[in-house]
Amino acid sequence: MMTREAEGPPRLFKAAIDAFRIPDLRTRILFTLAMLVIFRLMAQVPIPGIDQGRLDSLFNSNQLLGFLDLFSGGALRNMSVAALGVFPYITSSIVIQFLTPVIPPLQRLSREGELGRQRINRIVHFMTVPIALAQGYGQLQLVQQAGVIDGVWSGPGSSGDPLTTVAMLASLVGGTMFLVWLGELITEKGIGNGISLIIFGGIVAGFPGLIQQFADQTNALGMLWLLVFGFAIIALIVVFTEGHRRIPVQYGRSIFRGGRMYRQSGATYLPIRVNSAGMIPLIFASSLVILPGTVANFVGVREDWLGSIADFFVGLFDPTNIVYWILFAGLTVAFAFFYTLIVFQQQNLAENLQRNGGFVPGIRPGQPTQDYLNRVILRITWGGAIFLGFIAFVPFLASLLTDIQALILPSISLLIVVGVGLDTLRQLEAQLLMRNYEGFLR
Image 1: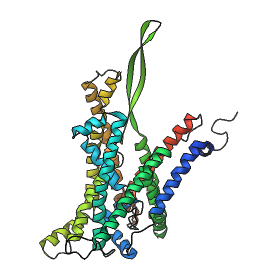
Image 2: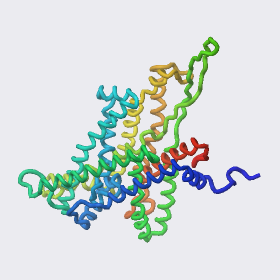
Image 3: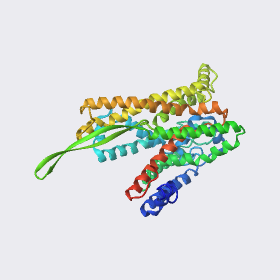
Image 4: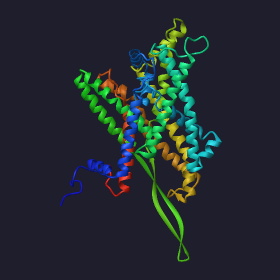
């Protein structure tokens, strides 16, 4: 008798075939792919007046723009109408998350269920516009100083044209809001989280260029070690992304049957992920560690004492300096704790358990449960924070071990790609299991 694994094609291919056999699931998958194609087409439409040669040189010398290009999916490198990507929306979402415990109206909205979440999401959309305007104007000024574009207005007496500047900003902001709309359409009518999939699609679109850089290397032993290192990092990301601590929870309830009251209880568990913060700490730490060197690059053209200080910071925050990577890893660990504690504080786990009749065995409901959960969260967050700090330090470590300086292992990109891929697979798994099909995962 054949075993279940031996029957038919491998499990992964069988699940993929089953997914396309189901009409509504096939429609969702094709819709998601179509939206990603539209995004990639937008990323190829540049705003007028761009000198592509100078733009490429600017990106090779500016780490901050390279980081922002990660979230635009390569659109910023082309200075297209989608150059800002969804980064302003992500920034707005993070700011609202941080402000929710501090501002009472936001606290009340967060406790109003689905209606409150919709209103908070509307506030996030409104905040995205001014953030996109500020970021877009800063990028236009940056590329104009590098000689990539002309005509950006910078105030009275400027040679730039205000109408041209407004048109450029309108294109950039409109591109961002269009991408946010595409992402929400994917979330609603497709498979997976739309915003994450847009970032995912942009990173994957950059893989051919990365492969070309890899193929151009002449250090065969270094390339072999880089491949081994890359696969090891992917395995580590999967382990920490899927790792979680199960806290047992019991629910007590009363039911009426035959005119009498019976007490029933149900047991389940509360999963707390080791890496609850995801990639957010890496985003914060990257922004902070890149910013001083970027600002110093523009001040460093001066010949006075201020220029000397700027030159010092340019060298200190250079990606080839180990201080840069140590600071990056340290900030990542700190932000992992900061963000995780804020998120769990907003969830009010102990209060929600008590309201629904749930309790942790051996722990009294209310504040004792909250104290217990806080201790557990702090302990397991150490694992997630150290993991994220290691991911932040991986590019420098890989360049040391492989002796390949021209190709930096994109550990943040790997974290995003693996995380979004696993999340999308889980959603496909749920869709298949609802229809009594075997899923992708065991």
